[in-house]
Image (cartoon, rainbow, N blue to C red; front, side, top):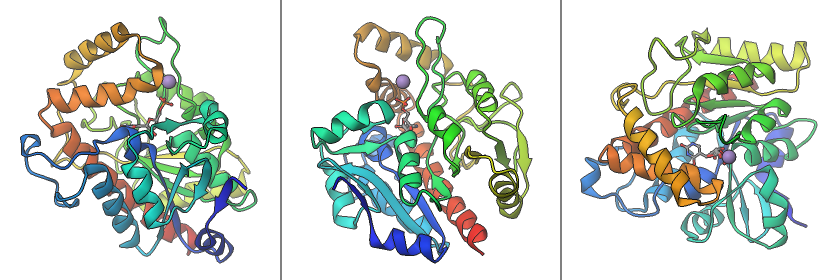
Length: 324
Ligand code: PSU
Ligand code: MN
């Protein structure tokens, strides 16, 4: 048996208790496994600086969800088992496993057969939301930024399977838009094509991950409250019977946001350097994120951590509202 749904998740779904799914690729491939280093600036107050950053973040996101009264459900693959609702010990093991990278739809089955441990991307985590109970899936999921269409797609068509999963999974993904390393206009157009509503939380520009959005970023619909977001979710799934996801776009807290466009040149250089390495495309995001942290002397890391905790809290509020 390689699919494990924890008893807590099964019971919570049966009783319609509020739950929030969380992805583990952010722990295994998105953030450093090293402790906070003062060269990054001062450590965000939401994480414990004595712990490895990725593990400290796991604890902080769990806490942010719990503070709203919802249950945090971590999803990932451990020694070949696809686990929906990792225990604290299992999550600790995955976060500390140096060999763990990330799996998505196309790589999942083979990695499972080889009994690997791996973080799950937005796509693979959405699969977990559905498999938890195909008739009554997990409806809320928090992350940092979804995958989408990479820049220079005309030269190399690199489109995340996150879009495939969003098209086919009725779960609301609470995220700060998409990674700012992507082609955001192309990504938003693709979301429209596959029928995924995008609602900005008190904003009408597509959130651009760690940067504050500007007038040139894609225009989106706005939800002025969690209740409005929850109402739209209910109409989408239960009145219209659509089976696609909803993307709730939450801007990065402005105390830590980077200026829009300030990274463009550095990112273009990092993109170019990555293309030159000839490394497989699974390495593209971690490579660019690491380059960004270096270029911004840690400011990108601080923004990433703060937005992840903020999104987890808002997802908790949504889960509580939807279950009420
Ligand atoms: N955003 C980040 N860091 C990440 C990711 C997104 O800032 O590590 C991960 C998410 O798990 C997302 C995945 O689902 O990257 C997309 O990867 P790909 O483009 O290979 O599908
Ligand atoms: Mn890709």
